[in-house]
Amino acid sequence: MRLFEEDSEPTTQEQRLFDTRAALIAQRNQVRDSQLNTLLHTLAPLEQVPAPRTTTSLLANVQSDVIQSNRRALLKARQQLGDTPDIAKHYARARRRLASLQESGADPGQVKRLERMMKGYENLLELEDIVKRTDDQLERMGGPRLMDSIPTTPQERRQRHRDEVDAHQEAIDNGYF
Image (tube, rainbow, N blue to C red):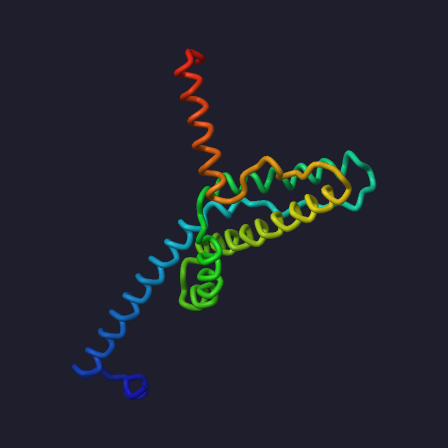
């Protein structure tokens, strides 16, 4: 304040304080950018997860198209995510950090991208919910569930992959190509 009022040069002590402050701000920005890049890398598969489709149509073919569209979107999202058990933890961390990233001057483009990824996670949860509710309704009506034969947990997906590899190797061993 004194410098502004007096229009004078800073003293040596004041200059050191300014330099220390500038170094701390640069270090904070570097840590912020590193954390943002980690979040962007971790949540990247969520960026393209679409929102679930809904319909009010009573036509069976329209309802079937919407049901299958949601099922395919969920399967594609799960395939892209692979075995990422900590995705909810990373989403929660991103949610906590979002406001501070915006306030601290992080790259607006990267912040917008992070917001899209966070919306993708919310879409994933909505897709899982709507597919589960559809499955439950189909089961109550006596029909087959949409996701019956599809492995849903990381362990089930690993086991299915091992089974496919084993079956392929057995086919090769038996002379089938």
